[in-house]
Length: 272
Image (cartoon, rainbow, N blue to C red; front, side):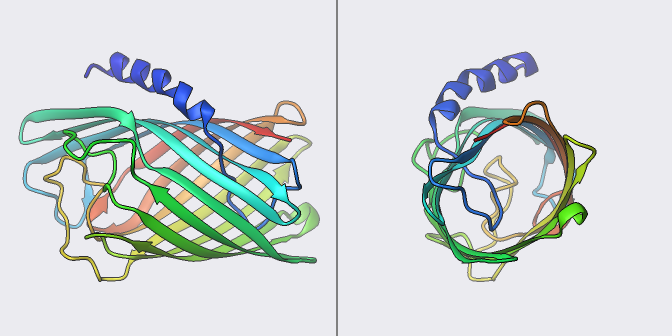
């Protein structure tokens, strides 16, 4: 699919994304009736991998539009979900394959356990793989359900910003290996309306996959077992008290059986 056509396809998919609810990471929960919503356009490209690539692999491109946010339901209880429209293109062995459609849908709840000078919360998440086919040229997902439990810690330090620590376990049905997930975050305010944020976001496969996947499916990001560590750096600006714009670069720092590369994201945030 030509690049211009892929971009137009992603924009067309935004109608689905905007109709879905959403999620903000972190230990803090929303007040009842409050929320945080983010619409993000992402571009990832790679022609390198951690480890030995599949025979014939040349390049992989992922254009996607992601809607991600959260809604305060009760005091200390937040509903979150995310949806994504993807346009994928994979070149292997001199041939080009592409798929455009809706990827996995995440649904979850986060509950605040401690609300003091620090925040301690727990979350449960379900990944629903029901919006794409199993025979796509470039698969949009693994096609199996995931269940994740996570413990989240957050603490603010006034003018020195805040930190966040998250630890989770993702149970995956079918062939893919279960995963240990971890995240370290630091953010702070810049001037009156700006902010900077950095995250180290990691996934460690625990070795119980039925077999190690490869890239022959056309999507080298869907190996059945892999490790990855990503460094995400964000610069944002509150245009009004409720609307912000963000630019994020996420670099795949280390890993095994997955792709190297950098993801670039531009997002619009609405908080209320």
